[in-house]
Length: 261
Image (cartoon, rainbow, N blue to C red; front, side, top):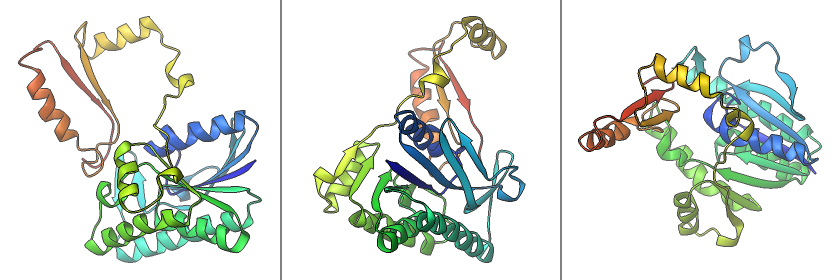
């Protein structure tokens, strides 16, 4: 089977790295032809916009809705955002129309990749599937309420045009069922573990790292992810850890990540 993934972020971003890339790579390993058309926050400085990785063809076809310099995300003004969205939408749509794909999988119910997926469905007769791995209307940062309203309306409408929907939380599954989407068209696919990234543990290296940052033999609560409070409210983790300390004063909280917060 030939599959095209439409992604509105780069494979270095959390969902791309932790969800869509492992799935695409595994599908390629099983013998399917897989292509990921994605957007990038630093498209102009990207050395290669087309690449092949582990049997998956990756194409960066437009800019993201944000720019990134190091760990800092920079947000466009109104005109810049409109231009970036137009370029990103066109790049993804062009791929959806040109690709010789049996299936188009829209990664996240965003307007840019959603419009591209619908174009492939309506103009080329492609089978369309949708993955919902976040509550987009509530987990993103918006500069104005109209942006949030557009995303919310789109997020609640796009699933009706898909043959099937995958979700990674029971919350999203229940939310979609409450909106009237048939339960038999919603498949729960939780985030997994990339075994190749995490299986090769060097005990000596681990001990050295624990020693370097003063963890010793203490029990550790580890957070790894974006430091962006709308989608990753780490402040809740800090509050929870404050409740842990009276019972376990030897515990340590380790936060690893970057972002605007």
